[in-house]
Image (cartoon, rainbow, N blue to C red; front, side):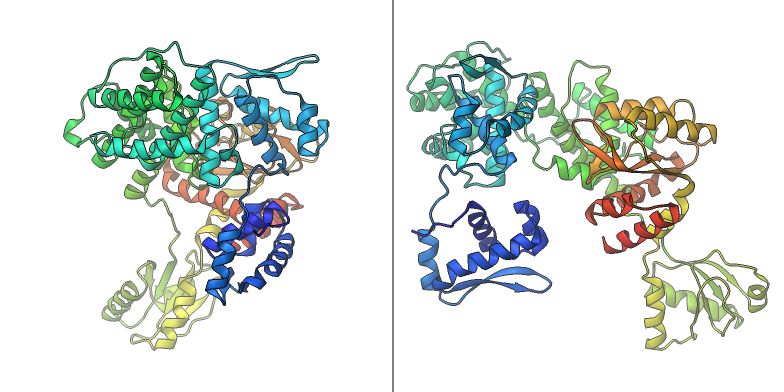
Length: 639
């Protein structure tokens, strides 16, 4: 049996068998440097060389598995030692292990014992406990410490099950072979039996679940069996009867759980399972089925709010209304019974769809002031996907500044029309702003367009000139293409919305509130925003952090409240505390006017590209506005 000398090699071996991956992606997945990745590949190749295989590097694509002897390599795949109960090595691993221990232990735990078991110091585990407590607090669970006895978890049974199920679901999504899925937290044999039974049960029913929802329910049922068998049944929970089809599934599923647990199951267990199924079912709703109930009221409120505060009118999109209503019908059930469904894509949604996320968050938060329901970030993330698709259908969400061209022609109207037709056919993105004569061109002091197309040679002013014959050669069209295909959107955004007057380097300690007061105060004095802007920025930040990622924050108001669009840039080499232990080093305070609602999408895309290009360290070290712009343009060209 082959045993890898350390766990990271096993992860590397698994990952590269499935797909070709570059160094940067492997380094990101394994949380190491690219140099470490190269060293690991060398170590891995030394092991698998005797099995007729190697991982080779292909420029442009990454490391790829090359097998010279398939029969010999198959013996390696069959004998690779499974990863069973390895010692947690990283802080993230230790947090997961600690959570599992506290959530599954009926007795008190001592950090000294765990430290000895995992070969770390007690102080190291004490540091990890801060994150453990923070995670448990989200489920209203807390850990109490008694001298000489140790630490024990306390909280409602439903909260313990929700926390444990969410954790197992997330671990499984990240790695099906995660050792924590084979520990005392989960009976893998029971889980596999439940998976088969659930699949058969749903196949015989009219109730539909997504694959993820079905997998989550399997984990919940496996956790429920563990808790019931351990003497922790759910005794107090009541719910409305609801759909008879859901009731039928929950009753049959309870009979299976009773058989697997070997114990009687209280009625509260069936009621809670029934609500979980109803909260995750896929609704089949036609536009004609939409009624004026609470669900439709929420859809109408969200779309009306987005139209009023952001200028995006999606109210007439029947497909969007249907999709939102389909999701919201089951969402209302979840929020009513405080059932949380994980959203593994939430971080990506917030980072890659920041505009759609902000408009949805603002609308839902406003609606929340008039209802007892509390909608979680996970639920908002699902709504964002629907709103984002709606924006893509109706607005130029991928806003691009098309090249603005001045056409100079002295050959008559027919030649002008022929050239315009040619440009429209070959490069439809060109926008011809003006058509003038040679004499008119000579009188112009400067040009606003991006470049000039002329039928005759001209003296260049402040913009390049492209000479184009009425019947251009392939070479001329190729040269024209080089001018047309230059990215003008990002430089245009930087030029239009970023100004030296609204650029600041914070070289001394400053907190978030002082920063907001100072920056919003200047914008107000300059007449760019009104008195409602600062309170709205504070309110938006209080809802959820505007930290985009990689130390870049995007504070802004709820709605497009500015009188004129401007981006206030703040560089903080020492960092500004941004809540939840996070620190912002580059801050872009967005003051956006409603008239710029389409360009607002491209503004958000700028910052997403900064994160993708990992530009924060270079931006943070800029000495002045000119230096910042140079780094920004260079970073955006790489994104």
